[in-house]
Image (cartoon, rainbow, N blue to C red; front, side):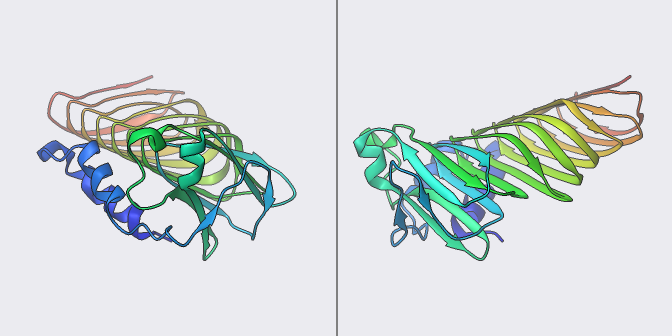
Length: 249
């Protein structure tokens, strides 16, 4: 599912090339109703919560996902940051963020939220926060970044991966999937050299860069100055508009 604040962030950041910056988007989100005003406060000791398979984070905070038998959440950070942190469970999605208008000043210092669940198949960031996980396993995996956030996932395992970046976010991925779809709008970067795939589909609009590993077929579309480097012996089909480069080996 897509929450209101994530949709707003994605739309705003997609038009950043037209003069709408990441900060503009963050200010809009912080001043809007993100739906977390009546959310549950995140405590410093692990609290058991209801089940979920998706994690969505908005703001400057860092989220660590840990595979475990139970569903739980806890936070570490300054008193100002902790006072504004909230979470909400909504139709299988765990939403994490700040209360309205609390992204700036002392409260904007990044907190670290540790989330435990048996498995998740989706992780989404809106803002400047980070998402870190040792592993994620599911047939269909969905990753997205709207803004300048970072994602680091050591081992993805599944049949299909879909990852999108709108803005200047970065992702570093490892593991193995059958097929992958990469989409970058803006200046984002993806390092997926350690993620083994058979087939891949790549779309870059802007100056984003992608490094990937594939052994089957890779379709690449670039509009702008973005670069794509493919290793693993794949057969590459390329469509370009602009100064972007594609290397395939």
